[in-house]
Amino acid sequence: MTLFRKMKFTLGAALLVGLAACGGGGGGDSAAGSGTLRLALTDAPSCGYDAVHVTVAKVRVHQSSSAGDADAGWSEVVLNPARRVDLLSLTNGVLMELGQIPLPTGKYTQMRLVLADNSATQPLANSVLPTGGSEVALKTPSGQQSGVKTNINIDIAENKMADFVLDFDACKSVVQAGASGQYLLKPVVTVIPRYVSGVQGYMDPALGAGVTRVSLQLNGTVVKATVPDSTGKFLLQPVAPGNYTLVMAAPGRTSAVVTGVPVAAETVTPLASAAAPVVLPPSASASAAGTAPADTLVRALQPLAVGTVEIDGQYVNSVTGAYAFSLPVSAPLVAAYAAAPAPLVFSADAPAAGRYTLRASLPGFADKDAVLPALNAGGAATANFTFP
View 1 (cartoon, one colour):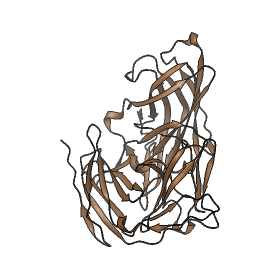
View 2 (view 1 turned 90 degrees about the horizontal axis):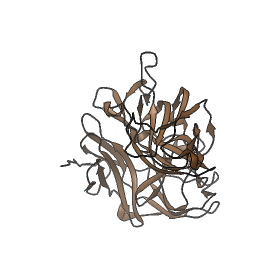
View 3 (view 1 turned 135 degrees about the vertical axis):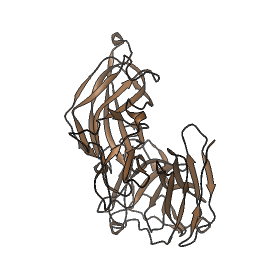
View 4 (view 1 turned 120 degrees about the horizontal axis):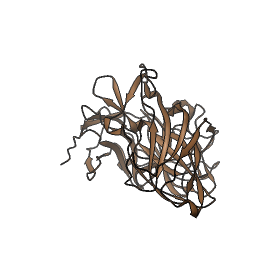
């Protein structure tokens, strides 16, 4: 069996699956009572794919962050039979319920999301359909065959339910393997509580469904992301209460940023409306490309007067180490939050036009930044990253 690495959560319409919950204690004292863990799966937006299928077999949890795959003390939520799902159908608040399991009270610090293997009888259990291409199997690195550990911090209280969502970022989890036509699955998943709170808004539907990326960010780090549907509506949920920056970006379009977006407990914050959606004007683009070691995540950050935001991000090609971005050169549009139906008043951040910093992140090393020269229409910049 294969499985995932990091982890995240969302709320909304549920796709229910048949499952069986099984497993022993998570290392706690059953005499102290028990609670319940409930889990669901959702997805952040993909990029360049029409479908990304994974087949979920089980989720395992343990009270020890150092427990090995074969150690005692694991508890499991098992899907029987394993469920194949297109991750790209799990956007805008849609969930696939994975099930629930009673657990001894205590703190659980390790989780593993286990996928079924591609096999002779099910060769496309995990697969990707590139836009304009044919469906191909997703391969998983050999190091994931026994399961990749994910650290969590979940408290199971007596007679209480701990409700969490695994948010899978398909865009950053599917990695090209050179020019072979093959793809690797290097899961980027985040685990968070199933909050009711979030943000709902509207983009111009003329931008095209599945093209525009909408994200809530804190200090340039994406907290939750999705894509608008065919009507332009988007839902970012679940999101922890707080104040966020909302970023909207699409190929060949000027980026738009809304600051000070409030998210209150048990509330979905409105932004724009179907009658007055956010419009992203056309923009010329420039390219930024280079190389970095395998497993490096490269993010295109744009420094604005109101703070830095992420415009795009991707893992490098697993064989060649190459990455490439097409970035808008028009000045990004910035507005302070106004509750719908009040209009958002955007103004251009002229000094930020064509200005980007590329940040490379490789596990085990400190991040590295490359500040690019100002990009003009049709221009190009190169940044190659090396790590000691």
